[in-house]
Each structure stands twice: as C-alpha cells, then as structure tokens.
Amino acid sequence: MPEAPQRGNMRFERITVACREEYRAQQEPIAFFWRGMEIHIRAILDRWYEGHLSRQRVPQRYYRVLTEDG
Image (cartoon, rainbow, N blue to C red; front, side, top):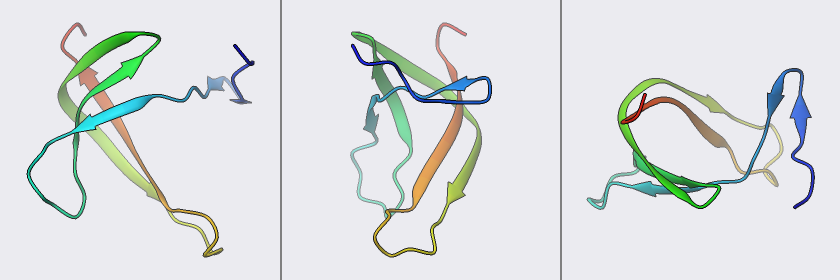
C-alpha cells in the first residue's frame, strides 16, 4: 500500500463513507469503512467546510466524529 500523505502530525488515508439514505443536500455520515472495518458513528462532534477559489477543485466537508467504540 502506498505511503499516506502527511501534513504536520496528521496522516491522511482514503476511506469510504456511508450516509443517511433520505434525500438532503448535505448528507451526514453514519459509518465509514477503514482498513477493512465498518465503523459506526455515534455522534458528530464538529464539522467544517473547505472551499476553493478554483472551480476545478471540489469543495470538501470534514467531520470530527465519536464512534460507537469510542
């Protein structure tokens, strides 16, 4: 597996996120899949948005979450 990109002390890894199924413009995550495990989200603790001046980059939404196992 390729080395994950780093920024300071943070290491970025690609994950797959499951969201609520009802239609909403900005769906919230309910679980994510990381290193072969399905991890369920108990609560969203914080959220933020990263916009870009360039139209060629897609704005990103980030969440800080509490998982069911802590």
